[in-house]
Length: 161
Length: 383
Image (cartoon, rainbow over all chains, first blue to last red):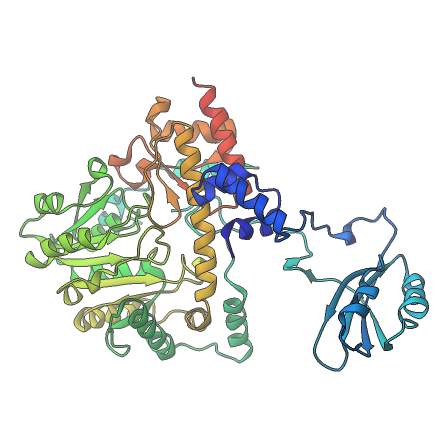
């Protein structure tokens, strides 16, 4: 992977100037490369990683991982039905996987109730959906490579040879 | 009780007071740290923990766990084509520091001279003195902080027994290409001077391939090679290093080691063995990260008017602060007091480094940026 992407993946706020210095390139070159990645869709968006456990004033959120069994459609395979599922705003992630079921769908809702309703009333009754198994998420430890814990203090002594 | 004369005579580090000042202050951004800011990669830590769970809590053989020596043998063979026999030519030490002490004690008779190019890591001189040897400091500041054949020849006499070479160098980040090393080696071999080669930063070489000294023509029998896990695997606190060299020297070092240290803690040795087995990817990742910081900090320092040559390895930049009109110590002290940024005055590494400071870029990009902002402020006040 291009080092520009490597840097941005870690820190979406890294500026063009800083990246240029880090890679010993001209700011112009870096800027062009980033524009290109954005245009191609290699860079889709920039966002902050938020530890929602620490934000108590918002409405609490429930998350469930749902295994979905599907009857694939002729010519379309799983893609069409997957699209019908991932288009629901409640769905935050959707993966086609190998194994005993077909789609792994991550759903978010205000509470247990909203998530259950979504599964019972929307997801299960979709044509081609053969069955579902819902697993509610109890605790998040690590997400997308980020450990959801405040960084512990640096343990090095302040000065050494 | 009277303290021994040798120890009494030893120079206490001149900047101890400065260090104490740093340690007593809060909210300091420290660029004065001589160790990685990464923690040891998890798979290595896990191996240490597992070894404890499995009950590996005993002594090991004096030379160190065989599987670790074998791992080192393979690492050197793959990386440099170097062939050190794990039974007789490799010794596991408590960091490179212990190894250096051992080799100097093994070879020095009273009055023997050891060449030490400066600026240099702080222990080489005092340890030489402890053994009854005489350190001969060679100021390299007029040669781009590099030792040259000419400088060497100027300082060699009949009493010269060895040289402590350290590259990439702490504190300057300077390293050498093959041709330069070959010329140095030629002088050493011709004069039968032992090369004590501290290559602990070898894995952190950025602009070219690191050349291990014993791979040079006729050098292997004339060199003790030192490396360790501290810098490349971010394992400073585990204290594991190793020495490789001619079997009579390693045997002599082992003799001292068995009486003074016995062996390196087994937990650390188990973790180090794991580092060799699986840690290469982490080393490469850390190196890439250091390299970006290096480029960033060199560009920034030069734009601030703190002239800085390109360090080729380690994680140090060694800019000149002469444009500020301050000497190294005053610059460091004032920068700490006024802007709360800690650096190490160049003079800590030898008098030739007056006018320079050591900046460690083993610190997060955010810290580096903030520190540079503060340095900028500090300099602007003086314009």
